[in-house]
Image (cartoon, rainbow, N blue to C red; front, side, top):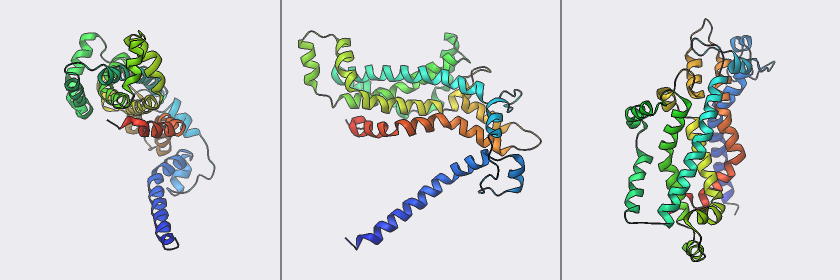
Length: 284
């Protein structure tokens, strides 16, 4: 037992060192966002702010220039909210139905269909840019929030289907057969039996989809219009807008504002994400 203590101490020291290195950029971002221009000019990168204030946060949110407009990140932030909420809910719902069908209502060719759907998980995002832009144009959804919702729903269905299908494979087939003997229909079984048992994998999928869609930049910059750009595009525009003096504290505050929703989601629901994975999200 005593012989293991040096090894344990070394392990904890290494983990602590890695954690400090990993968190160092976040520390720099936070302390920089709480400084004013004078403190940035005279202080050290790692020094704490002498007089912490939220002026940089207020400017990043409401008055920083993102190109020719100086409305801050607020319009972009609300565009992301309007895009993410329906895209996450719809892709998760469709993935659960697909997973239910492909695991409990198998039909000739269902395994082949599932294998083909998995191509969407590994397909590079750039491959779909041209065909998707043509589809959005034909539907009249080009350069709109609705178009971005459709893009992310279609892009997310393979992953959400994979998650739910692999989870539902672990549910006892006897539950479905017993419900069928009692006369329950396809949708009744899904609503009354399968969905109540799906909370772990639903949390995994919701968190995964929220993070992927909120942090997306490529689809946002390609498929959005002047009034529908998400927060990632707004952050890029803000950081690259030239001015007489580079306001690093405003850039850092803007980056934290853009990252805050995903951080909050992981802090509040991260344990459910881990529980969902261990409950079967990677089985099958």
